Amino acid sequence: MKNWIASLEGILKSLISPLEWIMLLAVIGGGLFLLIHSRGYPLLKIKTAFKLLFTNEKSKGISRFQALSAVLAATVGLGNISGVAIAIHMGGPGVLVWMWITAAIGMIIKFYSCTLSVQLRETQADGEPLGGPMYYMTLGIKKWGRPLAIWFSVAGLFGVLPAFTANQLTQTFMNVLNPNDYLALGDFQWKFLIGVALSIASAFVIFGGLKSIVRVTSSLVPVMVGIYFIMGLYMILANIEQLIPSFKLIFFEAFNLKTAVTGGFWGLVILGVRRAVFSNESGVGNAPMYHGQSQSKVGSDEGLVAMLGPLLDTVLVCTITGLVVIISGAYTVENLNGIVLTLEAFRRLFFGYGDLLLLLMVFVFGISTLFTYSYYGVKCFGYLTQLKWGKYYNYFYIASIIFSALVTVEVVIGIIDLSFALMCIPNMIAVLHLSKHVTKEIKERKWI
Image (cartoon, rainbow, N blue to C red):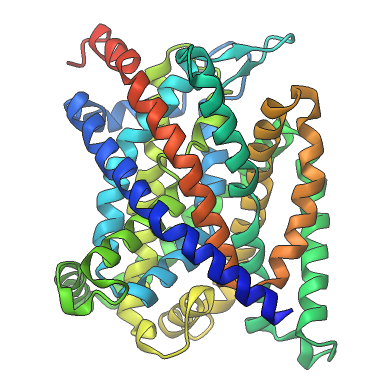
């Protein structure tokens, strides 16, 4: 088994290498174009975005709060907790700068893509809206939108698999609780059993459909983000004397060629961009699939709310994680990576049992991510086949949880990075091509 896993790792690395440069150009270059195109005005509407978040419209669909909660349930989770630790382990503290820059650009990308998901969407027979990248591609680009939509949807079938979440949840359970101390079944057997348990827990929610998913996530996510924020803020304030030195270290290493561990300076930039894209999914096209189901009648209203995603996800949660990891010094310990690194940082800074509290939050974040990601795959599969067949993707999704629990973190990161790149390329092409629709609406609302 080790041989084929090693072979799979090698194949994924060779495929990812050229695509990550294209992804870098698409996200950063495309995002900067949209920033200039909009003159940055959406970024000045943060206050309006928060007002819109808590107002409902009397129409079919889910509320804006439910849409953002579902998206955050997918993005605020192990990507922020272990993904940041992986980035710092691989590239040093400087990667945080590139994650922040990508997040700011990502806010503009989400504004445009989620505005389009409401502007260009279909209506189902029961009156429920049906939006997302595959729909604004098909409706907005008559000649070649359909091939782009198929490309995006096929890549989406694999990009939204619960590989990273299931793998890191399993790894957390194995490292912190070490079940072999209680019943010596062996690592492989325990990982299999954990995968089965996660599959069963996920099945209870995801087979209930969209309404079931948003009902659960809108209850869980705000509470967990609040607790994580309070814990993180306490640990930072309790070590306030290290805050300024930590920020100096972050900015120094972001532009220091000698400390750019992975592939030199540009390797460090790509690492920060890749982890930020994985964290908040800007440009990938996942968020428009939820925001496209919103009650919003005006596209830019939904776009503003969607823009809060990267702000809360990367700028807030990822920064807290990064600062805790750096202040604790845990990132300098050899052989600590991923969730194990973050757990050690929390243990050091929160009375010796912060890792246990984090374990609880990781479980809730992870489970909520497993719930929400399934809907993305259902939507992609439904588009490729028939809408009513989309639910059958859930069986494949559930089975993949068990597979993800058994393989290495390198394999799952490779699968997700490759799939996200393949989703990002057609989505950014469509968003840039259709950006004039969004800019027109901005001008009509007298933002420019």
